[in-house]
Each structure stands twice: as structure tokens, then as C-alpha cells.
Image (cartoon, rainbow, N blue to C red):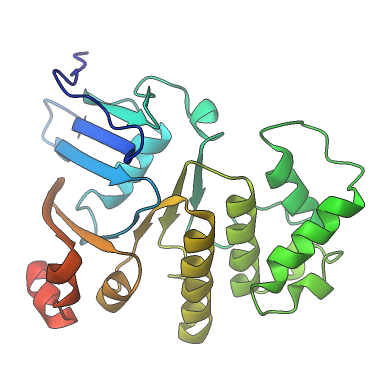
Length: 264
């Protein structure tokens, strides 16, 4: 399996958190079902950048996230995170530095543990496998973070997380991932299963947390308005390629009708 190397290019440690070169993945190669999921993707994300990702089903969005997380090995290309080549690193090691929130609010949390216990698991996963006892300082820290959600969940820290609504659970998942201090946060349609009002609230909190923490973030969404309203850059996938990369004034001037034509 060939591995592409970046030649004659110095990685700016101050600017770039994620650097992808020639990322390629082909499923069922050489068969009638051959599918090029990722077609020589090049992508840079600066530290603290918040990028939204658009594209139709099967365009390559989730494959990009899976490749970054190490769900499968690449057929070609490299992935550099915070100046470290993680192309062949196992997924469980990448998980120490890469956080991912899925569409299903039930994923990523332990339903039989309380809100506080779930937060403690996330908070200590890089340091110690020990969960108990939950000290007073951490308890107050978790409560203050939950208070930012505006959902009164700081008053329910001893409630089992499985008893929460989908929106509440997704909000706690967001707090869990932020306090674990990842280098990269991947939001995989994390509001798609929520009602419009709850979705808007979670997106507001997402923006607040991302800005406050400075974590580099990518968010997949099918909602064009959300893609333009949130973050500071929007990339569009089609057939395993990035076909558009909007930022700055060009992005600010776009409206949903401009992007809708790309999905023709």
C-alpha cells in the first residue's frame, strides 16, 4: 500500500492543526461494486477553525470523518494532526485527541451512569481510568459547564443520562467532548435527529463552546442554512472530492439558493 509523503513543505505548527494530503479510499476495488469514496483529498484546517461540510448522501463526508478517526486504512495519502503523522495510528489512540459526536443521541454516553459520572469519564479519559470518587472541584466544574447550556441540567447531575431527552443527551455529549480537550472535534450531523427548536439551541451552544475552547472543528450537515450560519468556512463534497471551499467574503455573500444548485 503506497503512502504519499509531503515533500519540500514545512508544516506551520502555529497555523495548521489538521493537514491531509492525497487522501484516497476505494471500496470493493476491481469489482462491479467499486466505489471511490475519497478521491485524492487535500485539506488544511487551521488551529481553532470551524468548518462546516456539505454534500449529498454518498458524496464522501462521512468517509472523510471515518478516515480521520481511523475507522479504516487509507489506500493512499497521509493525515497529519498537530504536526504528528497519524496515518497508520490505531483508532483507539486517535480517540485520545479526536472527539466525534454522532447523529444518534444515544451514542457516546453510558445510559446507566449519571450525568456527572458520564462527564467524569470524559474528563479523565486522558489521565486516569479511575472514575470514583468524583471530587468536589470537578463536580463544580461540570456544573458550571452544564449551566452554559441553559437547560437546567446542572440541577440534574445525579440523574441517569438514559432518562434525558434526545436534545438534552446530545447537549451533555457536547460538554463531554469539549471538556476532554480534543485537538479536533468532529460533529457528524449531531443535530439531525432533534426537533428544529432543540437543534437551533444545540447549534448555538456548539458555536459558543467551540469559540471559548478554541478547538478545531468540522461539522457535517445537510442543512444549507446551518452550513452558512455556523462556523467560518464551508466545504462542499461531491463524488469523493471537495468541489468548493468557501470562506471569508465569498462565503458571507452566499445564500442557500446559491448552494442548492450544487445538489441538482
